[in-house]
Length: 592
Image 1 (cartoon, rainbow, N blue to C red):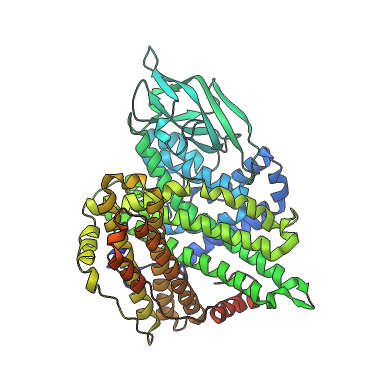
Image 2: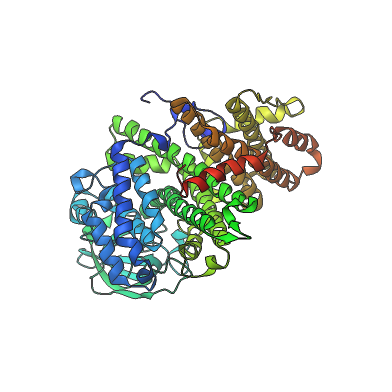
């Protein structure tokens, strides 16, 4: 794996890697499995028995559970050893995030603390700040919160009005303003707060101790889901923040915020996997127990379809999640070998994969919404009852499409970042796209080789990549700088890019499973169904985009090309899904 080929962010659109060049969950080592098991054991023993009490908004109970997880070392997985953590790889951090993701509101509180509540100080703080705060955040002695959003500044974070003015003696910044939707606000000891100094155009960041006079915490919000999570407004009334608590440099707060959002997005991609697997296990166990018309409902084709589709989307999402996680680890090592400090290397590596982070955030959150919704449907009337975990899971799932930048914002990031990285020279997106456009009348449609599943599917994916390139190129030409205002078309392109990355990751993973283990029958079924399904979706999105361009009347040859490029081998999807569902039904738990 040392000499494996690692693609830059977004480069998958024009390049390929060998299955042996990607990391797959089947390769977790014993230490990683042990950390995941510790997380599972903690949830089983401490969190699951108290879910109903947590949902009543018991702040003290949530605080107690967070501190208990800290005592076990679970809060220090991502923290450097020199500051009291375990300094684990990014892959391991993601596995811990996935495992904790099955714990509903607790997962939100835990991730807010150990991610956005701790890592801004670890990544951007100086040694004194890390010593004072990170060492205690890593053990749970202190609980952290991240204060960015304001009543008038959500997606447009830099428009915030919270202000800081240097005191006359030059020893403090005087902070005034208001933040909202702050996770862990009810009991956090330390906050990373974003504000503008004087009349600065760009935000700065500050470390604020919650017990400082003038910091006022509002009551917890009443929310649709994640009811156990403390979410409140925070008010700053002439709060004196020591000048040594400026985080990073003046005017660099927006960069800090963006970097931490990239990290939050990609870790959410892991978090939702745990929640999805829990919902699938709940679904199949209920389907096996519930009898109608004299038989278990798990025997019905309609239920098998739902169960299989839950599994396929979760497994595909997982494939992409750990593929990019290992890429980030490799990028961290590369930067460190060039003399970059580990904290800087870590945040720069995560930020580098901004395209994939946004892809995972969008796909993962929508995957979990689908899985949670079908879990309720499989439970029927009982799924609507608060007696069942799937009811809680359904409500809790919805926030993920809003967290860490809405999915609408993240779809724009997928396209915008990929295009900017290409323009910067990271990979030749526009050269490849222009070449395809010039050859549109004789464009090469790769023939699929149905004697080799993987050759066939990779040929189909290469064809779908050509659709993406043609769509991006034509949209860029037709709209120029105004493309940013054509959000419907950007969404079409973002969805095409997303499905290509997820599908390619799935195919590469399954081929590697077969290379390592010699057999991958059910996983081959997943590949068959997934590529077959997305080809039809990509055809529609591309057609929608081309038909919405100003020169659509002069582009019949492009529409013909899209039609040809989205043809894939026929698949008996019914039987493929039934085989996948039968394995799930037999195991009575998610074991893929």
